[in-house]
Image (tube, rainbow, N blue to C red; front, side):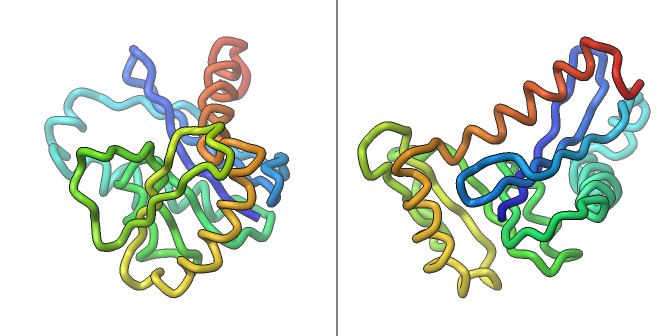
Length: 171
């Protein structure tokens, strides 16, 4: 199973983090969401460039991952700040992003090409200590990539958070 983690920030500087655990066919198994987190301007000023690292990762990211009850093998994120979660979890974490042929290749990245050409090519980035998982996760993701977009669960998290915000649930 896979754990996708992401967040949504709205126009009022309110954040919600979401975690979606899916099986190997990308069917949902578990969903977790934080309550609204309001970022005050003074927090942004005082934390500066360390805002994501300190607030997002050390506090919120760890808490939401610890709340997950399902057992998963890998964590996927689309914000590179989340890679810092690797310091506090035993699970490998990978950054998924649309492949950009004009960006220089990173030593710790793999290009994933949709076998049938249905979906955009993906760059799978990882930390050096997770290199041992690359062969197995690449095989698994290429198998999924035959019939599903491996980036799509991030859209589900965003849509679920927006739905919850609009409906007033969990305020």
